[in-house]
Image (cartoon, helix red, strand yellow):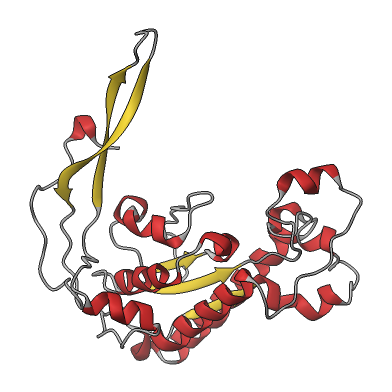
Length: 265
């Protein structure tokens, strides 16, 4: 690393928390990913943390044994999610959120516990420069890091700062591999016990099938006036084939080899 055969895939879906991504995972990932960046902190208000841990366990069980990196952004002020208020009061700077309270702080703390439990990497856009931001240091004011209090792309230097964080980690990771290449081979490992009690309870309930994904199709339904038709979503009787390890994933699930091409989405 690096070499010219690297391929980059963007499987991100806007405004999608982990529990939704988990159900569509196999359609958003390349066949054999080796490094996956996850950003769910921005959706902390809608995030199911137990489902987030289930997603981590599912990704780690993929045959390619990918390395996982949480790259987390969070709200800087309480009205970041109220886009209309930000637009109508552009000159009013809302107070900063406490660093250790609120849904975003709880989500980031949960990610850190997952990184510790599963030996993953956690990168934090907020913690990378929080002291400078809170002091309103030059080039680290709110307008510089995230003018809408959430998305780095809205700051004058937000995209550059986010890129620098990732580049710094990649450089450190590459140096670590070069120093001890044998310790970083891609191979699936036995998953540790869940970090969250809710995850443990759900896995023990026997109601979970982590290795399956749903196949959804649209069916046209005519309206009463027949002037236009509406699309109705229906779930097809199909599950993806996946061979994994761990809870309910030791067996390959086959009921159909693939979605019917004419109806797959």
